[in-house]
Amino acid sequence: MMNKRPVLIIAVAAAVSLATVSMAAIWLKQRDEGSTIKVVVATRDLQIGTRLQPSMLETVSWPTSAPIQSPLHSSEQAYDRVINMPILRGEPILDTKLAALGQQGGLSSVLKEGKRAVTVKVNEIVGVAGFALPGNFVDVMANIPDKDNNPVSKIVLERIQVLAVAQDVASTENKPRVVSAVTLEATPQEAEIIDLARSVGALSLVLRSQVDVASVDTPGSRKADLLQRSSQLNSLSTNAAMVVAQNDAQRPAGSRPIRRVSQSLPPKQTEKLEVIRGMTKSQEPTE
Image 1 (cartoon, helix red, strand yellow):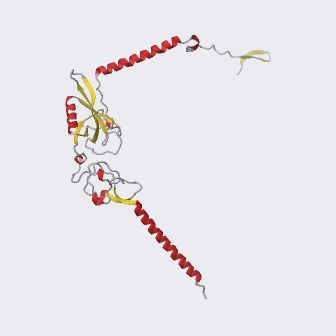
Image 2 (cartoon, helix red, strand yellow):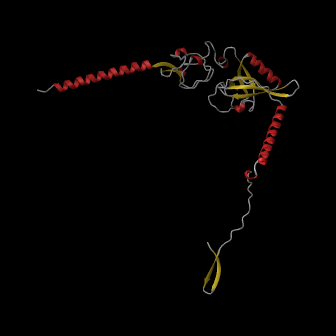
Image 3 (cartoon, helix red, strand yellow):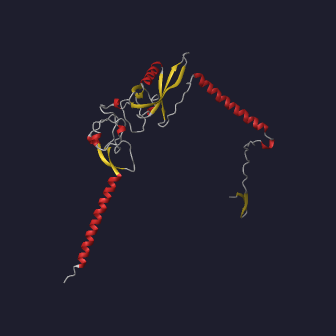
């Protein structure tokens, strides 16, 4: 009679193993669900002013160990919303990156409340050699005549954000682009200052750091300041030369700098060896 005990043991072990694997899978799934949340991300790179469509969005699991502020948890929350800043592929769609409900898209949807868009005509120099890209901050410098009709260069506005260059309202490449116009975001009063400055003089844009928020009040620069600066540099150079000469004169003779004078050395004398071959005697140089 065949012994059924080994078969029974194998069957019980297989059942226990299967139950253990199933319980482990359920536990891991529950743990993953507790450590992640559903987040809406972009399926491709999106530019400012884009109206979101279903094909541009997907929902993925996002780890709770890397929290993000105001994410969207379903694609329906983002449909027909307009983004107000560039979004890269795979980047979460945050509520703070979306314009208010009802916006129709385009540059107007990028403007913050109380702000205006003003366009400045620029050339390669005025446009900071093409490095004034959307999202950058610039200072606006005006070159205008003073009350004595003398030209003055002065920064009239600080930390003005660039909204667009020419017709491009988004650029994720940190490359120079020579354009003919730059659109700036300004308050109504700042827009008036820009319009007045460009009507009475010339405007230049001064690129500044993204993290630099300090304000600097300068008196402006005039032609006299350039000449005065040049005279100060010449005076400093002359004074430095006089101080060096005085220090050399006050040093003891033994401690004064030694001036080395190069002298030409006499030509090296070639040694010769007297060689006798038979009845002939000669002088040959040594190697």
